[in-house]
Length: 159
Image 1 (cartoon, one colour):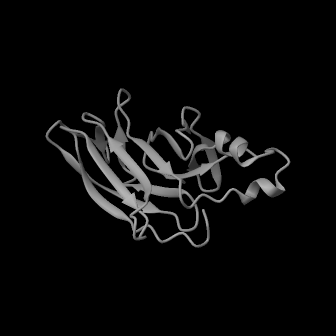
Image 2 (spheres, helix red, strand yellow):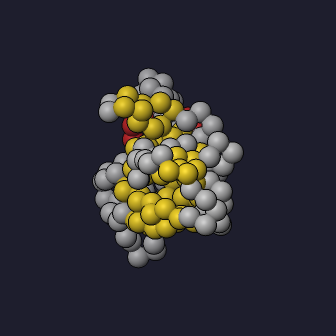
């Protein structure tokens, strides 16, 4: 992300088990540029702190963007999603993407090659990351994929 990218404020919102919930986090620029869109389908919420959730339940979710990078933390940590349906996230780097990392990379010859390798990674334990292999470049300027659990997520490419 470019160092000059405007701050993206955190967001807390209720996800309803009875219907699709969509939350959009925007850069604080005059154009309200999209940073993240999180979609939580109906029947996604399985349990919270071990207590099963019903179709009538909702859960307060918080998305905290990570300053200076394309990343975020989704909470609460005790929330579990169903196996059949999970939330999906889409992070857009259309305006504030910074691909200067390619300049020093022995792996990627061009910005487009680097962008094609981007995917979501989540923090399994502090400092240990795992890629979400089903995440992918979406269009020319976004990464999209499933969010299997509350955790810390970043957009990155293998080294």
